[in-house]
Length: 376
Image (cartoon, rainbow, N blue to C red; front, side):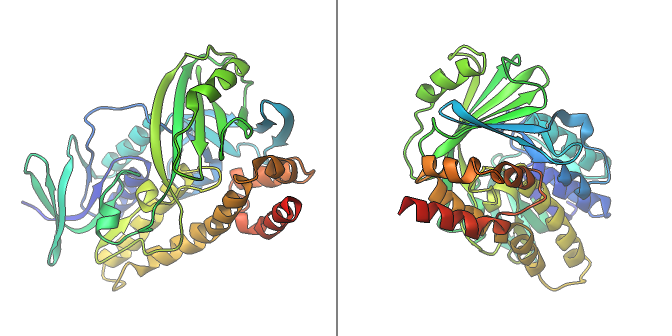
């Protein structure tokens, strides 16, 4: 049995990105995917077009809509519109199509894909890592990347990411037809969802609708929200394919690496705690993990510490402010909407955050002070 350079658990967006870059650099890479077929994934599918910089191939083949305008409402009224900067600032994809596209690129670069392969055991047997499937198949590698999403048990097992996890609770609805949703337009609704918001993203011939709650551990009143939201979008309240999910969101600075092991994407709790953006950090972490692992495998560095530090600087520092904004905004959402969305400069700031041109740290101090002062 040949020893791999890297085993990647999970062939989603993050794992497939890491696999492509590692294989493209000449490493022996195997992707392990538990699902044998493509599944609809509970994800809005929105991502800043700036993610293109991390790939040498064009992502447009899987982009179904380019968003140029975002409409915000409070209880389906009191609208605010933000025009997004640039020619193609925000993209919408079907998450299952993006994942398959990236996995194909990894395979074309030389990576191996094994599916179905559900990992039952992961352990370090010096100097290698051993991965064992439920049916007893065992593979060894010099390094392991954990990329199997929010439900992965492995980050906590190996002390990666926050040990005190914070979750967003979401319901996603995949709808056929566009309803009343206008071309190149996404919608965010902040009044109907307790401690959260709802969104509607257009697809080619369809719409992704989602509901997310970010504070507390209570269940979403999803049916009550959808009874109001879907007719407003031109759909029957009972339409669509519905999926519930519990999503790990960013909850503090913690190591994302160990001795030959790295966590990326949702498994690393990188999801935006305010707007639930998960694709950009998934792709960023896959790219940076591959870069750091490549140096480590070539013995150009003695540890993977650079990966944790890079993700802190490029993502975590902004998310620390995003978490603070989230905690205040979703506790006082009506005040937050008036002061954080309806201010004359707010739509442009939100547009710049969605397009990846600005981080939460650029606006956080002013926003939090304004919200707390008004509340008091």
